[in-house]
Image (cartoon, rainbow, N blue to C red; front, top):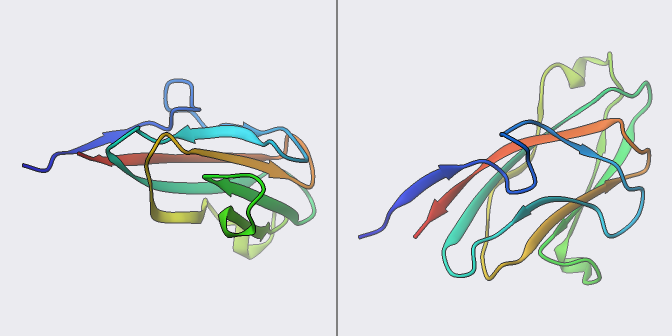
Length: 119
């Protein structure tokens, strides 16, 4: 029988937001997937910066372009930054692959989220 467990991100302390510190690869550790179970990963971002910031998510790898997700996070105080912005909508990962993040500006983005582990 399949089981589902809701978990905090492995890179989070006590379920708190994870600050994105690096400005280049390898990024801040967000989550390490389970070795055999499927991890359904949900991530949101918020910004404390007064200009837009390029966020790079390294989703299971750091060199292959197929594992990179890039997006612009709008500046603080613009209508599009009201609340958290969804950046990873339940994508699956397994085999102990790692999710990391870096940004064009250090220490201004925070990532939060959770994992639904499917075993």
